[in-house]
Length: 103
Image 1: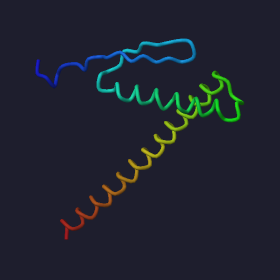
Image 2 (image 1 turned 180 degrees about the vertical axis):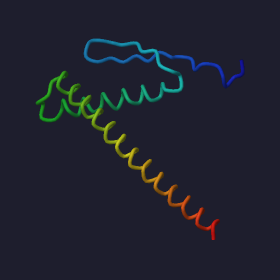
Image 3 (image 1 turned 60 degrees about the horizontal axis):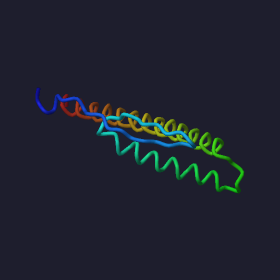
Image 4 (image 1 turned 90 degrees about the horizontal axis):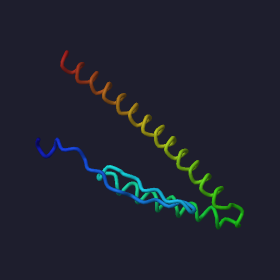
């Protein structure tokens, strides 16, 4: 089996929320995303908790989770718009090239 055909090995990432810890097995090439995402998530939870001391742990985690989902949806929509714009440009380029070849 060639090196490019080898499956991506998993690594362990430990995530702690409140008094519970979770040991996740993630693909090695995605470890950075899990670790960075976890750190950003914890920072955002802290920001919610410090905002006038209105939110407790559970509320801050819930709000941060919802914000993450909204950000993913917003990014998905933006990506779809970019893909659509790219397809439109390729179609126009194809028409231009076809017209130039025919004339």
